[in-house]
Length: 506
Image (tube, rainbow, N blue to C red; front, side, top):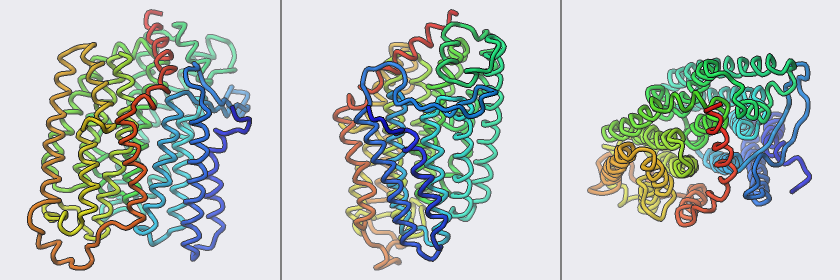
């Protein structure tokens, strides 16, 4: 195990890059771009080092780093990772450097401010996944909001102000509820122990919860506040309405990060905090949450069928796919939970790739209307081939990562209640319907008059665009054929949640 503070380095290397870019002249745009990419790649390499040095099968958190921050309230700067955290950190660093590289061409104004915002966003996202102090977790959670607000509000589409304001309002409401739950939890711990020491320490709070020390009535209220915060971020039905607008108006890289990582923050919070700290409440509310998950799965698929805009279609498909994640969490079977986590990672890779591909077309046509895109296979054959691959992955073609996650959720849900599993699997047919129908309208048939009018401007994919998509495609195939590469990291998580479930009777 390396002696260097690897978690602190992974978290704050992007911040160092942002500070360096801040002192560079704004006119040095190429230098700024290379600095941002190099910094993000450095964080990615460190995350790969974390991945290969992580000890599989070891329970608890590894690579822990801790320092007193506000000792009078027991608040620490405490970091640590288990198998779930490691996977999410690597997903974050991978999509971050890909998104920065994909921004080289499309982002031409305020490049300095954009790259600073993106690197600060990366700091917040990584911090959420490695924080083991609830107050520190909340700081990183809030940190994510500011740069994402700027990325959508400054570099977004025509209705960017409306979209980013809606995004902030929804997220801010959830954040305030989260803060109330965190403070109430800390006060309860302090009252029981007579000291603030450890009141925000996640490991101590989890042990406190596992002993059944949080009262049932307290759990119900605290869980509800925390659940709403995470449900908004997932987003679960009916808290999803901010997502299509944010995706539609965000720049391409913003959509990639929004779908690939930010939606996962909510699911991660449910797995890491909501269920283990308040197990009685989690089981009490499991029924309604499962119903909402099934509604989201069906609703997202049905609404996707009628979407005229490529980005909005993919956005609504995310609502459906993330419904499988929350379903897998709250049926409380090991297989379904494994499927939920695999679905989180797979969705980040697949949907990130789909948004990158939509961005490629938008940069050439300045339009995303499905009706105008007929015949792209004739003019952009390479793009159409890659797009078809990611469509098949999103549908859940066996051999690709999208299949394994949904299959495990289905198997785990069937063990819990067959009717739930049958209801969810019907949606896989709907997914094939709206995705293949969209692909048929966009790629095949006669070339549309709109595309014909673009003439020589409609070129196929460049090498840089292929470079952003190649790692995602490779990982989709790798995890589809060898899902154990991910599942091997999840055995400590299973033990951890089993202990949380055992506390229900406490």
